[in-house]
Image (cartoon, rainbow, N blue to C red; front, side, top):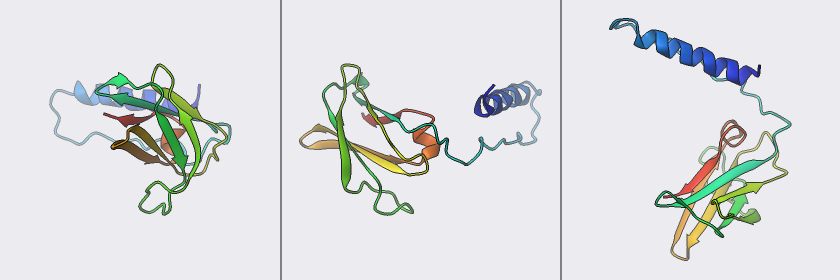
Length: 130
């Protein structure tokens, strides 16, 4: 079983025990997430774009690396992909240890952006829009 799944299951079990402890006022133990190392086999990020919760098709999404990782903001784009019917697009050939930014151009006057470290883009979908 993958290490991340085991840690997630352990955290869920501790949360259940803490909730059923009969009102104990002691703080719940915390569990740190899996290894802070990037997974070298994951080189693809998924980006979902929605408008008012509805998937947005045919929206251009730019990918870039941030100008400054201490305060990430989108940098110069290196790739543009368009969302499909379900509002989803993928970016391939990413470097596992890098932080990336994505900007969705939903309308000429409205764009949505997010930057994420490998801990986020390797394990979940980047959500843009409203």
